[in-house]
Length: 282
Image 1 (tube, rainbow, N blue to C red):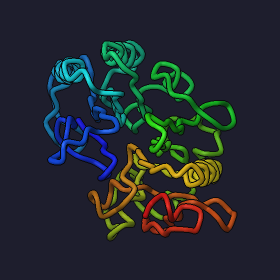
Image 2 (spheres, rainbow, N blue to C red):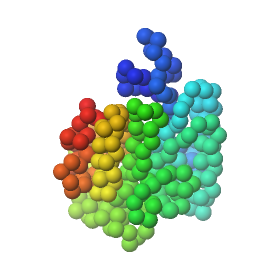
Image 3 (cartoon, helix red, strand yellow):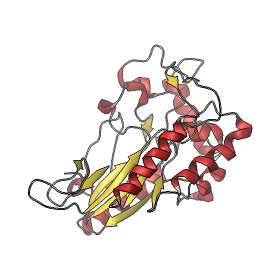
């Protein structure tokens, strides 16, 4: 669990008090990559051992722990609630089963989508099951924000906005992702970073990008948060900073909006602050 106090940004632990006796403004639970499937134990695509059925027991223990804590304001799930190896005729029921376990938590749960989610279900089926509010054309974009207390705002990004997975075959966002991959990754298997160096190893099919409309939305959210003197916590299934993960797991690309006040520019995965976002991130 994480508790947020007024004197510091985050405090790992039970979030009840600090050495000065100050209580947190709010506390919340975090979980990621449940990757449930009703199949025997096996290995991930990279050979990592997986305990597919057991993972839902881990989630149940987490939910019980969150409820026992009694002071958590919400939980945020960072995606991949089911595994890509889940048989596709079981995908819908598997998502429903895991989502129902989250419903046992006594306060709000905020979800985001990951690549394994999109291996199983298209966005128009997935987002309603996870109760993800969305924006954009077709109401299938999974980015949103919420404020658990007046001084803070959480921003959940859709890391697969521009992606080769999760969209219909002729969707412009899928076609744009395929274009980026064809330009940046010479391998016939676009999930392979073979031969790519450094941060270029992120140009693989299981990664994604943030499109212009989402960047414009983010810019407006950050400007509004700045005006309201809110601190902003940005969440995404795909790591934002290449230094925080292996090179192949960072954002494939974040597409900046065209305006001069674009909130965040990550042309090569390296953030640069602009006037509109400086107070939020500093």
